[in-house]
Image (tube, rainbow over all chains, first blue to last red):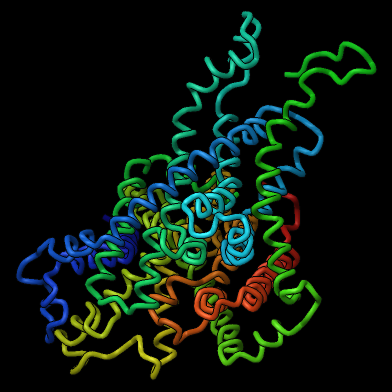
Length: 269
Length: 292
């Protein structure tokens, strides 16, 4: 092994540790018995691991409700964003039309408008429209945040399905709709699933709008911000909350690890 | 695929299809992005009756937390973004050497893509809090005699350091994705040519790779700066309000003081700063030729 090789491996190991160690530590902190967390001098490794902190966390009514709310909001967001983004993505991928560039640019531009800016005026508007503190209200904002990404991802998915196949089906007598449903859609399904997963992560992780728009129907991130800022929740509660936020996202990106770069690559272009 | 027009007067069938397909998304974004954006500006400069006033802006600027929030937001951005770029460039160049196992390495480095700012804040809290892992290690190794409180109001520099560290840990991944994609577009021949002419690794990086990466670097800079200006959950979990930031003040003014007008003034400020930085990057980092 040459010196250069060795340096490359050392650097890669160091950087991997930099990413992985904090995640392992929050998992350790969340499974360390409570009294060990506050003891000093603190042993580097606890004598035993336990699930009591995690069990304490999920047994709280507010947490269970918030978990349900988070999943509900994410589900609604996926449905809405796909319904809106898929046709627009298809148009961008398959049609040449006047204003196509403008549309693409406009969608790219809306990506830059952050939840920070949208949340306050939407909270004011939602109070008037009766959407404040509802799951639908949060899902509508998450949809606004994810439609640009979903449109771009789906456009690239449809670009990956050869248009010739659709044309061949049409030349054999299929209608445009039938050609789409029977030929293009089945081939695009994995890509559409990836777009849905991206939307799930975006919604599951979104903190700011969810915090501002909810009072009684908080999502998990909103509940955690509220309990940390307003109620000064104890450390073990925070660690358990942190682990609960991270685990689903980790599982998902492990499942889609092969598409990870393509997926995020499309969204930052 | 477009059918032939069947008469000079009538629109050819299918011409409207793309517009109809794009209409729902465009209409939705108009209602839920464009309208609230204009509304944010309006709320910031009008009173409850809708009359034009600068009172909210004055109240925002006069607030105790305003200038610290501006300062801290800009400081954290100025510290975190270059570090993220540098670290992401290291990762991207390492991946580009295609060492055996580089795909696993790439995947590991991409993991924080799925970690929210809130979760990242809580993760680093477990390391940096007074009885956290860092203090446990430092005391065990004899570096410190008693645990040091990294997250206290007495040491604002350490607090900022903690926030910057967390941000670098979390958001380097997205920069890395941009740079890895950019490096993949660099033709292999360019590197071989450089090698043939005897360029050292450093010269190749400086004179071949970095100039070709310029569009990617620009994209990464814009994305990261705009996102850094929205910094919220990381700061709140690590420091509460000890380190005020613009997005945090938006939250406190809306949720704590119930004042959507001043909150909107803050939101508008975030919007203006994002636009300003984007414009500056687009002007100063314009590629010499229009490339990919």
